Amino acid sequence: MEQISARIANLSESETLAMSQKSAELKAQGIDVINLSVGEPDFFTPKHIKEAAKQAVDDNYSFYTPVPGYMSLRKAISQKLKTENGLDYAPEQIICSNGAKQSVCNAVLCLVNPGDEVIIPAPCWVSYVEMVKLAEGKSIIIETGIEQDFKITPAQLEAAITPKTKGIILCSPSNPTGSIYSKAELKALAEVLAKHPQVFVLADEIYEHINYKGKHESIAQFENIRERVAIINGVSKAYAMTGWRLGWLAGPKWLVSACNKLQGQYSSGPSSIAQKAAEAAYLGDFECVEEMRKAFERRRDLVVDLAKEIPGFEVNVPEGAFYLFPKCSSYFGKSHNGRTINDSADLAMFLLEEGHVACVGGKAFSAPDYIRFSYATSDENLVEAFNRIKNVLDKLK
Ligand code: PMP
Ligand code: GLU
Image (tube, rainbow, N blue to C red; front, top):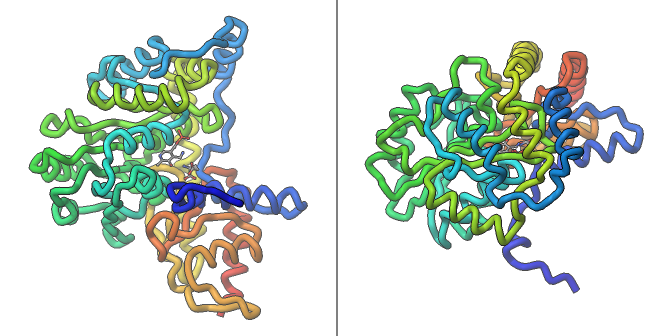
């Protein structure tokens, strides 16, 4: 007899990881699938970072680490926040975890009581709503569309805040849209938040360095809300280190100590080797990050051009991250060989099974009229994938 708790039974599976898994299964059957589903850099981790990890093994970094991470790593992150972002965070205000994903979840679990409301601007990353569910909170989705470049306005934010609002999760540059809030836009949101002292801000900045617009702007820079902001970031995207599992949170000491308590009972400090690698990343040459960023920017230009060629797709020009999020609802209700496309999940499955291109339907990102393509892959793959997409969508009548 299965005895799954209601807490887990009610949780949805991560659609990004599920689609990637499906694509891997088809590949294992010998089918030539192009995987534009999961979002991860296709580059290898830079050499100097790998060397630091090898050295850490040889130097016997094999013991439990402090729950919030090695002091040397937290110092390196504190330094990064100062030099790259102009923000002052002492190492005691930083806690490292198994990827940024755990940092977001730590923060949600430490902040949210049952029934508390958490505002999530949508389209949003698949895991936010599920994390809030895990904490027995209530997600309050603010919907945005392509016509407003997927960014919430101060008026929308004001309207969503209630006495029960505990926090907001803001992701810029955004997964899945690639939109980036400008300094002026963040300031306007901060002014609204300043009027509501019960609202805490979780700023997910994991795509900080995948930015085609210019300097990264953090909402933590505004003094009027600064003490109620936690920044979440990590090495996964900037340094092509998704598998190393090293992320972090920087914020007020009371939140960091709560995360420390949770993590201490739940998973302990993150991997010793990954921490030494991350330290080398933050202390090392920045050129590797810039090279990858340039490659993503070139691919962004390519993929926007390719997607604009597809009839029925409404495409914007993302300013960051490595996702394209076209509106695809013009295909809903169309059929091929007795198979009808009812929603974006159906469309993603159709593209996978008929076109052998893996992507993720927008429903998983609380935006059912859209579909997400990760363009963190080679130019050849992108050209071939969009060729396939065009041909297979052409069959839908
Ligand atoms: N936040 C967002 C918006 C993401 O897309 C992801 C996925 N990588 C994460 C957090 C988690 O990143 P990590 O691999 O460091 O856990
Ligand atoms: N964040 C990436 C994505 O959206 C990786 C998968 C995940 O953790 O959701 O595809």
